[in-house]
Image 1: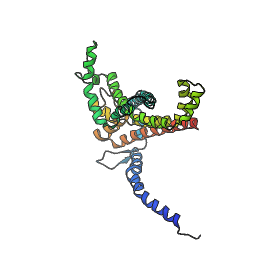
Image 2: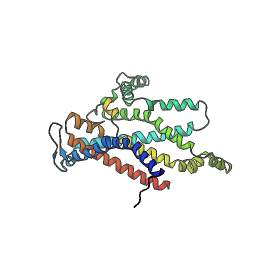
Image 3: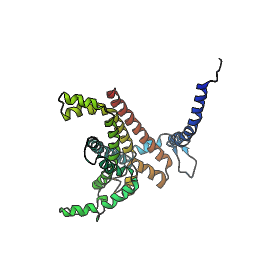
Image 4: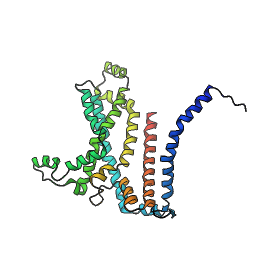
Length: 292
């Protein structure tokens, strides 16, 4: 076989050389840690001694532990009650701010400001707002509701985690929906208006079908973000009261670094990884097929 050194070969070689640093970084800081986590999940490992292989014992333990199962339950509750309202509000805002209204640019910026604020700062601000003497209780007392500490009651503490997340995340998905709306050709709307279509009919038969790929992307990203949540419960409640706001990422962190059970924490991380993988694949297949 005769090898010819031509322009295409040179271009491919330069492309490979430029991609090589990024590929090495991915292998060292992403692929290798993931594979190592899978290995540790089958071992008893506490950093002080070499890992000892114990098979599926870690998985049997965590899948029968109420604390871990409760964290799975609250993680799903957080994802559902945070991101369904977030996506609906973001779509409504995007539709409103995509029309010709006064101060459109300013309103877009105002709604996007929470996105650029650090999660830690957001959590601290809302922790102060939900305090017994915080602004929310002051406002509630003005309408006759007795002030209480939101973060010390099981049900209210969960909502105290969910509400700030909706406030922070809505602007991010609004921008994604705005980008999708601006890619819809205006000729479709003009033709439908000539045919006498109502605003609802234009939304139902033009906007939604044309926006479906953007909606699919937003749902997939929302599911991943929801199941990975960590900072708000860590900063605001440390998983309390009585584990009511302990999400999966938080219990993985506490198991690994508070109780020094690296093997068990790795098994929890693998379970979280598999859940996210299955849900993402299912959503992509389900909505991707409809998009086609």
